Length: 62
Image 1 (cartoon, rainbow, N blue to C red):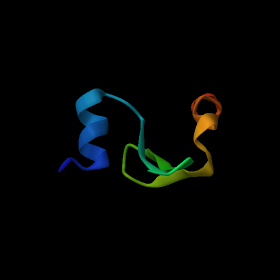
Image 2: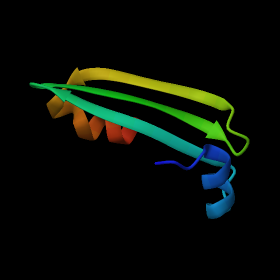
Image 3: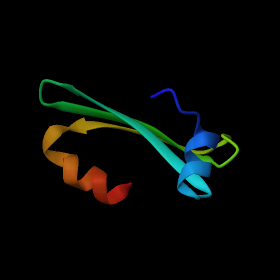
Image 4: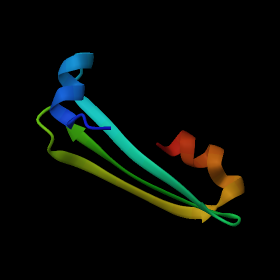
């Protein structure tokens, strides 16, 4: 998307925005994301690599 984190935060009226990407490689899963405040500063990076069958565990963790 062409929207910046501050634009998304303003449009939705929120204080934080979580951006993430998911990549599958065979039976492996890679999730990388970041929680940013409304100004666009990263406050919590997140990274996970593991088995695809752990997808719901990752969802619960996030």
